[in-house]
Figure 1: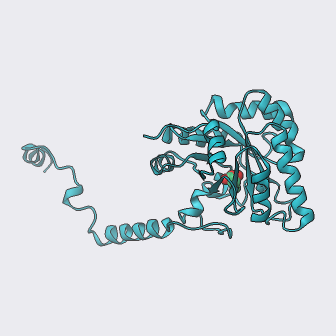
Figure 2 (figure 1 turned 90 degrees about the horizontal axis):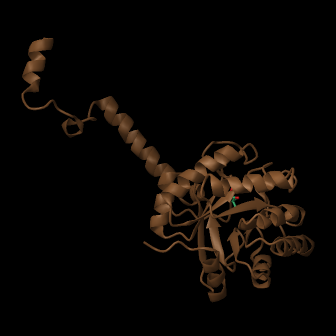
Figure 3 (figure 1 turned 135 degrees about the vertical axis):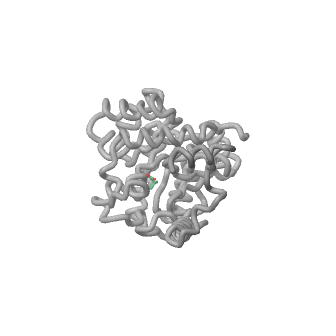
Amino acid sequence: MAKKKMIHDFIRMKADGEKITFLTSYDYPTAQFAEAAGLDMLLVGDSLGMCVYGYSSTVPVVMDQCIWHAEAVRRGAPNTFVVGDMPFMSYQSSLDKAVENAGRFLKEAGCDCIKLEGGVRITPQIKAIVEAGILVMGHIGLTPQSSGQLGGHKAQGRTVEAAKLVVEDALAVQEAGAQMLLVEAVPPEVAEYITRRLAIPVLSIGAGPDCDGQLLIVSDMIGQFQAFTPKFVKKYANVAEVVTDAMKDYVSEVRAGTFPRDEHCYHMLEGEKDKFDSEFE
Ligand code: KIV
């Protein structure tokens, strides 16, 4: 079993140009698969609201849901670095609330790090959480919790003016003390500059190949999430088709009486059938 990677490993990987592999996970079995596949890092993203609960956005997700899912992921992947994602309104309204909720991910779910969305405007929260002794991953570019303000789930930083804002956010997050940064849906040209400029590891989700590592949402990359597929996703499997086909086969076999067969039954112990028949005839 590979040794669990920690923040100093990710800093070294950045220095050596070794890519960091990062995937979301929301449950115990998927976390087991991810650890067996050798992922470096797992994110218990608030995308669980859409991928697991069927909400139309991440906004309704609450802390308790994130803690329960993070706990399950921790159990499934005890030797993988796990990042807990702070849901909407778990950190925006006060610094105390931000620190308290960040701490819950470590104390109750055994996470290694927390992630929160926002750049310049969220630096007081980043500082406060870091000062409490908690590793922080920033998240800039397309930030789904504030997609209303961004005009929808749209790529960010596509003009020079917009790119300057993304770069300012990146620098502010590092300056506030975050140990890693996730950049979402930003042109590769801009993400490459940020990766080169920052000392901390920079992870990409839809920000091109030049970042220090890549994140995808597991439900997208295994072909489980059906509502929409962002441009940056590559589907490595079609789980929806595999599972639906299996369920269709089950339905038809039950209806046809071909399932269960004798090998799926627990027969009575030797000699018990005759006694049963004489008692219950
Ligand atoms: O919740 C999540 O999975 C995320 C990704 C979209 C980056 O924050």
